[in-house]
Amino acid sequence: MRKNSLWIVLSVLLVFAFVMAACSTPAEPTQEAEPMEEEPVAEEQAAEETMAEDTMKACFVYVGPIGDLGWTNAHDVGRVYVDEKYDWLETAYVESVPEADASRFLDRFVVEENCDVVFTTSFGYMDDTLAAAEKYPDTYFVHVSGYKRAPNMGTMMADFYQIYYLNGLMAGAMTETGKIGYIGAQAIPEVIRHINAFTLGVREVNPEATVDVRWLYSWYDPAKSREAAESLIATGVDTLAFTEDSAAVVQVGEEYTTQRDQPVYSFGHYSPMAQFGPNSLISGQLVDWGIMYEDILTKIHLGIYNLENMDTVDYWGLLGGGWRFGAPSSVELGGEFGEPINPIFEEDLKAVMVEDPVLGEMSVYDLVFARIDQMKDPAVHFDPFEGPINDQTGTERIIDEQRLTYFELTTIDWFVEGVIGEPE
Image 1 (cartoon, rainbow, N blue to C red):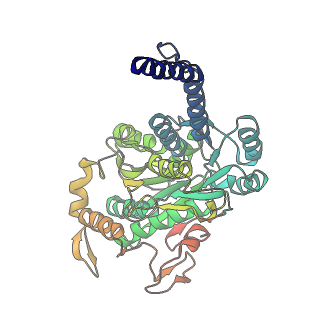
Image 2: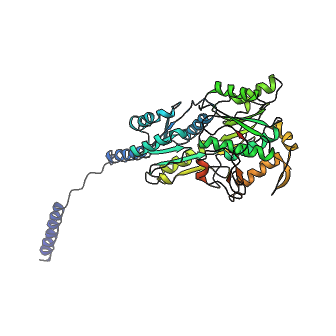
Image 3: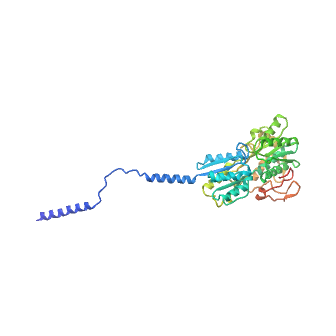
């Protein structure tokens, strides 16, 4: 009886187990997982889209040829620097654009070439750049050397007035005739400011010296520069400075010094020019636009600058910093980078002594470097445009202990005492 009962119980349990097994989901056979193709493809496409969104095209409008050895050449060196450094950046440029024809090229850069940022590198482009900024609110614009801005348009300038003043100190010390020449490209505030600063330096060392200005009305014209230089030399000028985008003036000085036994000293402009005047070029002005382009473009790329706050972007590069005090300086004294003064003229400059009311008696050579330290200091202990300063008619324009404001410097239209010529 017990055996029959046990058999019945076991049979019921066995049936129950089969029923449960039948109701459960059948197990899948064990196999290697198939590769998931769709998800990686989607991730790769998303990454590519993100990279595409992060790329940027910056375009540059140049007033002269890139091989001019002056202003435009220096800008293009800066463009190449940022182009080679950043994979997310693409650049394009157009050279020798007449200032009256800028709007056509601005339209082309925005509409046809899809430029995200457009740099215009001449004062005469200012109004057309502003008009383009208003016409294309989704494009960034940066104008070099101007003062007009908009929500999507900033300004930048690596300015040389401090450097020109320093070169003026040396010109005043080196001239034998007291007659110095200046060949100016265009009568705009930037060039007038530089001529004035240069003259202030000259007359600080040599109060009776004069600076005779000849206008070219062209940014790049080596033939006219040579003609103007030789015309000035014929009047007794023995030292030359200039704003023109070639080395013609330096070459004329070197020819007179080495071939005619008539020393004519010069100062380079924007690009390294020592090679063209090893026996006659004393110093010059040098610029590194690359560090300024880099700072602006990276901040646009990171979203720090946007299409609504570019009117607050106004870089003013001086000895104290490229865009603010403490930042790398975009300007440098010298005929070539790393050499502030041609070594062959150091002893001559050390032999000329001057008396400064604050620094006391020192050589012009030492004064140059003392002034650099003063102007680099955040307190700016010295500025060339500190009064009292008269204009060329003898009228006081800057009163004692007053300095020109930034706006006054960028809009100046008058010459200081000691300049021969008209500021127009």
